[in-house]
Length: 173
Image 1 (tube, rainbow, N blue to C red):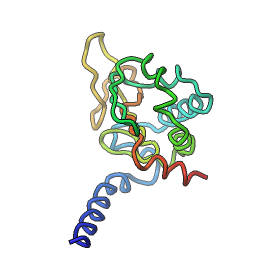
Image 2 (cartoon, rainbow, N blue to C red):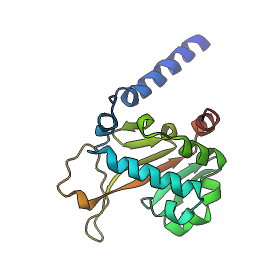
Image 3 (cartoon, helix red, strand yellow):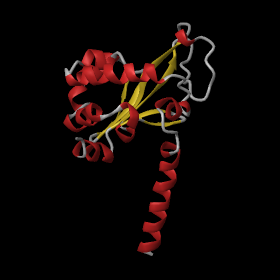
Image 4 (cartoon, rainbow, N blue to C red):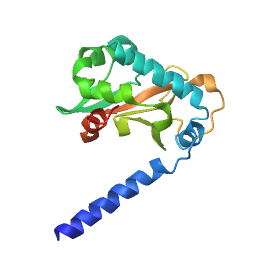
């Protein structure tokens, strides 16, 4: 029974990894599944996030997030409605392991799924978010053609300090 459960779990984990692992060799090929046409914007976004994390600039990080956002930490899930809430909880959300995992992320090692680009094996997801008319519902760019690139902005759409964050941080070189 244990062997069958372990085999099923291993097969499930392999299946989950397939969309990430098969995204191509170049950054543009890997990011295409997330609906992001050019890796230059992703490179800039990652650099800005890493600079903000490196300098503990909570305001800069908060400005890169799409709200509301559900944040999962070791303490449980919390809904963050506004930037000031994220700023108040910055040290809890971006603890030492999360910061180290983000700082270790390299552009050519980013993962991508149809939901967005993954930093630190999914600790952070970001994607293009529609920035249209006031009051218009936000729509994600995944697998959609963009008629006007100025209406889309890369933003963090998920934060999950799960089990892999410590592993990523521990394996950082």
